[in-house]
Image 1 (cartoon, one colour):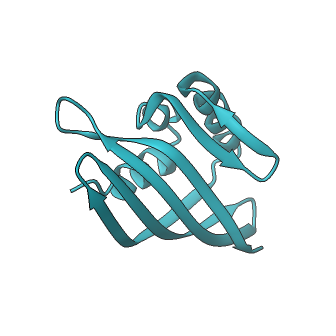
Image 2 (tube, helix red, strand yellow; image 1 turned 135 degrees about the vertical axis):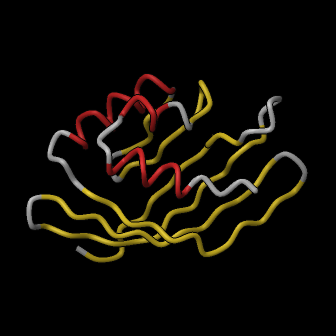
Length: 114
């Protein structure tokens, strides 16, 4: 099952930007409100900056649709940092790797409420 949310949430809440970046393929794209971040190293740096404030996240998988080695995951999430909160949805495209694991290739969180 390609549900990466439990691993993502654990890595995020432990402040591990390296572990988060390793959930993404080498050329993955993370879409931010200011534009796309491309490549695993750029994604790691984005998470390192984000995690500097020791935020926490909760995530719940809503649906997983698969077609062979590709899956579409939709999730709901809530984020808290320094007394501020936000919540939204996320759409991720993941691909099965040769070892049977799954990795993000496209990640697009959408903020619905701040």
